[in-house]
Image (cartoon, rainbow, N blue to C red):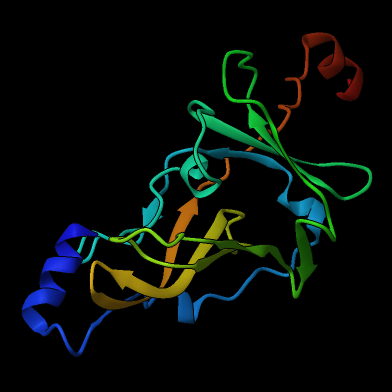
Length: 200
């Protein structure tokens, strides 16, 4: 953000500064036709892809825990869907990791058009200067064709950095691979079974 402010200063104090970053890959994304319960599973905490940093240092979330607001979930993150269709996010078998997160359907998020749309949060910057004023953040989940979790993080707001008017708007993308469950392997036929099935 400090670099962004310096760029604005040299661009012109009177014209202000617009910080704008949108990942072009978001436009072409189409969610898989999945139900809410299809989001249950185990995902890698490290992103398989995230929006690379722009010249001002803004980038997508490199970890799923980062996309959810911080914490320490370890290597893998487990998503559960409860009987009431709430979402629970927790570490996989690690009692020393961060406490689980619980999102209530209808209160914290809605499920629409195969996507989990979290309700936006307003953040107030206060009256102190320097610093941005009020801004809003939101997050949307979808599953792609491979079952990976796609997270779109959006933020926008306006205010002042020192005496410079600043407008910020961004849509960042992160994709987290699903850890496939190993299929149960069928037992190999035994010699006894073979002798029974084979005609003499």
